[in-house]
Image 1 (cartoon, rainbow, N blue to C red):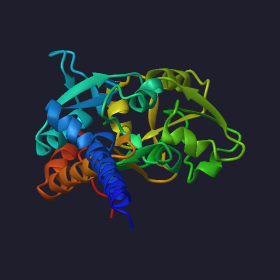
Image 2 (cartoon, rainbow, N blue to C red):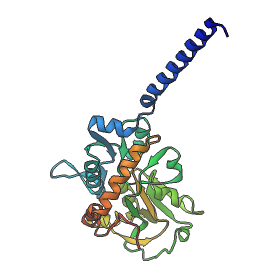
Image 3 (cartoon, rainbow, N blue to C red):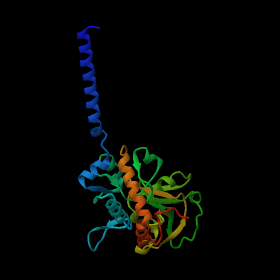
Length: 270
C-alpha cells in the first residue's frame, strides 16, 4: 500500500473518531433528565387544583394552600432536596399543562389509568381510595354495585376516574360536572339520583354541606392515585419513588392521611 494511501486512511479514521466523540459529548444534553432540571433550579413545580378540599384548597383564614396533597407534596419535595413551588390549575386543563411543560408534576389525586399511562409516566401510588355514592337523605336505597344503578341518573366529576368507571356500566345516565358543589346541588334538587365521588372526600362533603344528602355504599374499583410527569425521565422517576418509599417507611404519609381522613389511605386496604 502506498504511503499517501496510509495517510488518507489515518485522516479518515481521525475524522470518524472526532465525529463519534462529538456525538458522545452531545448525548447528555439531548437526553437530559428532569432530575437534572429540578436540581439545578432547586425547586419542584407542582400543579394542583387548589379548589378541591380536603385534598388541596386555599385556607380562608390564611389564604395559603392547604390539604392532604399539599402536605404530601411538601414532604416529598423535602426528601428530594427541593423547594415546592405550587401552581393552581383548573382540573380540565391540568394534564394538558403537564404535556406542555408548564410544571414538572401534578399532585392532585390523579388516578393511574392505562390511558393516562400512554401519555405520562407515573410514580408509585401514594393514595388508595374507592368510589362512594352520595344520595338524598330521604332515599334509603342501598346499591350493592354500579350495575344496580341501571336506569338512574348519576353525577360525577368531569374527567375523573369515577366518570370513566361509571361510563362503562350499560344503562346508566351519566351526568358530568366541572365541580362537586354543582353535582351535590343537582342531587339535592332531584335532577340526578345519586353522585359518585371519592370515599376519602365524602365525609368532608357531608360535614360541610347543609344539603339533605347522605353517604351511600362504596362501589366500583379501588383507585390508585399517583404523581404524573413527562415520559423519558428515569432518574427523576427513581428519585421520586425513593422519596415516596421513605415517606411511607418513616410514617409521614400515614400521619398526613390520619390527620385529614382518620384512616391510612397511603396503603391498600387490608
